[in-house]
Image 1 (cartoon, rainbow, N blue to C red):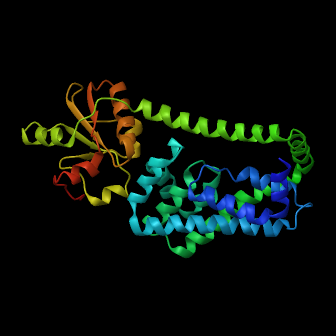
Image 2 (cartoon, rainbow, N blue to C red):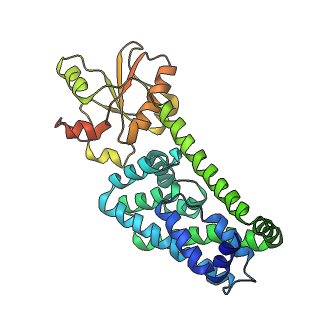
Image 3 (cartoon, rainbow, N blue to C red):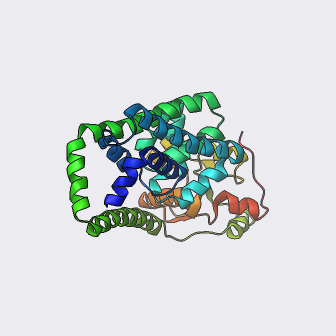
Length: 309
């Protein structure tokens, strides 16, 4: 444990830069505790509070701007990938887009305080065409608020943090094991949240070929598009109705309770579609199924799509 503290004391700025950069790029390595510790050790390290804040903001900006440029170039594909690999199931593109569209770039001020939001919000900002200058300004301010709060807390409770570090140091290798155990518990908790989330999405699905056959048979089911507004720009499955956020809360669907209802989205594991399908089933609709692979599978199979009007 003393070795780790020596690293922070001697290479505090470099250590903080690497930790913040990796976390903002998507690695499950929390940087907030590092900022609290380095804030508590300001009087022992060869760095000042303004310099520590500047380094943290710079690292966050580099990572966020990389996601911004990826979103600008690749659009929704980047956000879908983020949603797929994230340990936080609450980082789904739909929720992030709803918040960003409602508050605009100002949402970046609090993005880093919301698990799973920062990377997706940065990619989304690029995908919807937020001006680079505006993105950088709001993202930098958000990073400063996030890092500054951690540094302030560390300096404010420096004696308590120092006492905790002294205890861990006195424990020697057991202190390192304790920190490693806490980190393992953190990862396990995130993994279990995602596992439970995916388990909750398990239900009967319909393939794109089966849906195509239903459409060709002349008895089309009720098809519901629950994608985000950005994703819908590429078109929809013929005959699909769009379910907006207000409709989702009210779940008003013009269909008989025993009729076939197909729900699709463009997110990994048909997450949004499955959630809406379960809500519809709770409302009494008995034959509701998400579309396996969503709109991407439909397009990949060569089926036609309609433009939104």
